[in-house]
Length: 147
Image 1 (tube, rainbow, N blue to C red):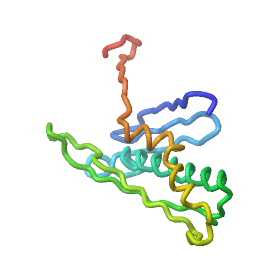
Image 2: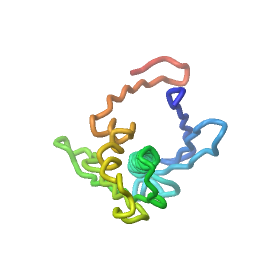
Image 3: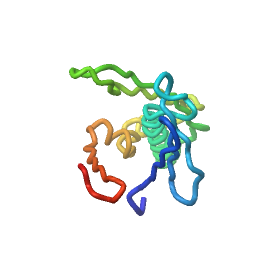
Image 4: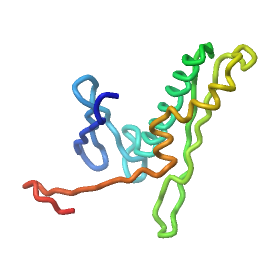
């Protein structure tokens, strides 16, 4: 990756937003799930687990290629557990990613090496596991920093 990724988010209405990933991609409409939003797009928890799962399958694909293993494709399903913290706030407490290789393990003589290493190649899941520091700033319409 040559630059630090940046996105822009624009409010549409209620809890619906458009995420701008830059000129190479169409905006992605997101919304909160009912009853808060209308569910007119993926919601933040889905985006989080999609990012984690996508990074893991990309890392698996990289590791398979590194060790010249033909898995005939890689698929994944991701889910998360949402619960309340000590303050009663909803938090993602666990993320589960189930990766499926289309080939059988017996067809891949170095699959053990792949399994040893692929998770360490994943920037997103390894960062989430560590707990990524998040810095938040707030500015008003005139650009004055409020937080």
